[in-house]
Image 1 (cartoon, one colour):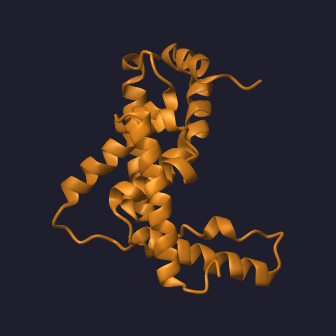
Image 2 (image 1 turned 180 degrees about the horizontal axis):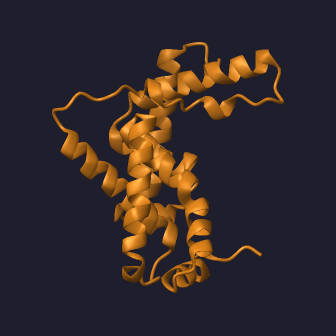
Length: 188
């Protein structure tokens, strides 16, 4: 039986190790995805994701449930990434080559030609997103990749829902234009 977040949290607070494992499994993909987005290095993203779960565990009592758990987790993830990047300022950074955002596009069920085309499209999309402003890239990542609802993004970023909608629209238009500039034949 799949337990909801509130039930898992309550069981975690009572010391249920299996509930904690279930909670980590439920959110580890999203936490890691946020960390990859900010850190641009798989090893650093894993370290940050681990730190996020340590902080969640330490703060279980502080979460009161007056909002959804996922935005709280993602806000914590985002804040830890930003803090980590600030601490690293001035130190050499690893490149994003370590994180392959297009790896999910290749499927064993696809033919080699289909997998190659998907990887090329993914590479093009990633290059275009890499040229976007941090704010636009973040809003697209949260909405389109993380699959958050507008209301959840508004809670996470602490902005009105109308602002989220307009930023999403502007970011999509910007991304489409950047893709067209990188690949003039795209969409033709």
